[in-house]
Amino acid sequence: MTSELVIDVQQKEISIALLEDKNLVEYQNEPRSASFSVGNIYVAKVKKLMPGLNASFVDVGYERDAFLHYLDLGSQFNSYEKYIKQVQSDRKKLYPFAKAMRLPDLKKDGSVQSELQQGQEVLVQIVKEPISTKGPRLTCELSFAGRYLVLIPFDDKVSVSSKIKSGEERARLKQLIHSIKPKNVGVIVRTVAEGKRVAELDTELKVLMKRWEDAIKKVQETQKRPQLVYEETSRVVAMLRDLFNPSYENIYVNDEEVYKEVKHYVTLIAPEKANIVKFYKGTVPIFDNFNVTKQIKSSFGKIVNYKHGAYLIIEHTEALHVVDVNSGNRTRSNNGQEANALDVNLGAADELARQLRLRDMGGIIVVDFIDMSLAEDRQILYERMCKNMQKDRARHNILPLSKFGLMQITRQRVRPAMDVNVEETCPTCFGKGKIKSSILFTDQLENKIDKLVNKIGIKNFYLHVHPYVAAYINQGIFSLKRKWQMKYGFGVHVVSSQKMAFLQYEFYDSKKEFIDMKEESETM
Picture 1: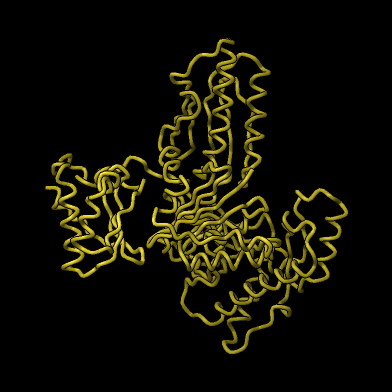
Picture 2: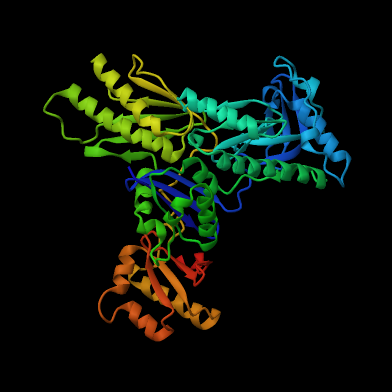
């Protein structure tokens, strides 16, 4: 299996697509202005205590207060609080972390009122992004994740990933980390550290310690509360850190700045793979070029088709996700109803495992498969689902089919499910149901080009239109595009974009920044 990462950087958002054997399996989209990422650390204030929940609400600057449960304060909460007070007591000189005192562990059966007060400052880390009506979820057990190691301040333990099975390798890694780790920190050794040399692990440990020290300096220097003191690495680098594996053949990026950032990171973690990072310079949108746009439009939405006419219906609710499996107009198998049901269900299991990763669906997922009477067929389906979910990085649990033919799955939810709305308001009529005559569309485009060139003064630009419209504009030797170029200059470029609706258009300048030329009044 080969993996490719395609990164589409736009003016307002970044989209990341992971392809396995050219099939889209993971898709993430985030605004470039987004600031509430998992892993960010804030020095914040306790806003409200909730004794009934044994929790508190904390102001981290989000519109809804973040939630911090007593058990999420962590065993070393008192050590953190004492050290933060020591740091803030002297604004000129930083209190050395190596001299910080470790206090007794917090009691597991204690109450939030005994540890927190309204207005108290706490150092917190986001573990769940805001989802629906809920604010972020917090913890006071801070951690700094790297490719090979996870650093945990005020914890002296060294733990090794359970996925490393060799007892000899586990003992080697433990002994090695104990010999290089500083005082007052704990370390979790990740699976990819298996077989790594001491120099590589020591380098990363120093980088993680530097991140912790920089965060503490910000706590010392800033008076404003709440205040971001450590920002998780960019989504692109964070995804690479967790996903990168030797099977990656290519990483394509269409933005020079992000390309350099990705290239630098890959050079650090796998120098021999630095040449797989490639800067995409094509005029066709990067997602169109790698067939990502088409897969996004066919994979999201309420109804998802898969092999031989069968389809899934996926419904999202506040409490859970519900999936219904339908055979549709599928050609019936000659082997009878039971064989047909098993075949449809196995195909559904393959597609559902992909959909869970693609949409990042979390919480409870209930799947209504087609009823099967044979116990061995139900077992085959359960085993197929478990096998398909082995590729999923999120923690999950799958139960066998119930007597009603339902399968229950729980999957770790860290951020809101990715929901791409493939049914959009018509961009040419703005939902009014009436547009100008289609035959006049090219005249309308020429008016925009004339305004852009002769009034605004932009001579070099790209016009993105639907592939059918692009084909019409480009057809023939004396094409419409050629006429425009003769009239307005050779800076007129027409780009076929699968993202566009039929009579939709967008203008971009030579730096690929969007030019707003749309006027709602033109549809009247």
